[in-house]
Image (cartoon, rainbow, N blue to C red; front, side, top):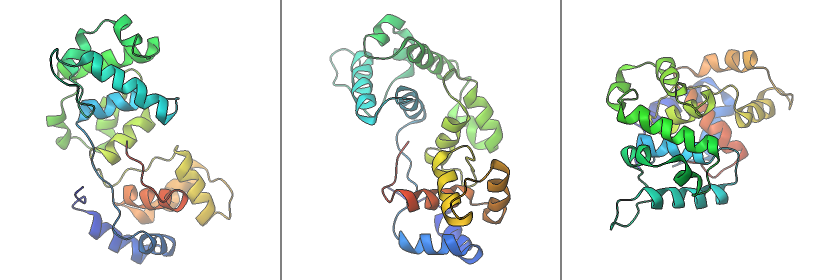
Length: 215
């Protein structure tokens, strides 16, 4: 998967500004953020996976994709059509293993895409906070999910998910002698990382889990 265009510049600058990140960047050569899937599919998968195990989420996801596939065609697990989702009854989605709330959330997400209330073509012109606001307008998408989407799908370079437990734990480990920092402390620390806070966060996650997670 291709490297974000800003990645090399970001790692060079972070390495000169922060000794902790300099060490972590050197420890994980050749790894980087990667985009996965189309916008609707990526967000729908994030809703399916909320508060259940990875294995359970994959099983439910496969059933949802199969239920929404065009008749006579093999289901593509990497793509879900919002128009077909919108036409599905809540009961049909629930039969795939979704809770009533998640079935409603995915239908609401599909409506946002089919009505162009969420229009990926317009996102390039939005700053991070404006795009987050547009995403959290969808039922079932909170700020953390929106931030993960900006980082992992939109490849936005300067997202700082201060509520993320992994980031909190890594910052505590490397900068606060194990004591969990406040959101204000994380923001103050991260001022030196701008405009590459997504990259800094990604390397701090790697210090806890060397295998990159995809959202």
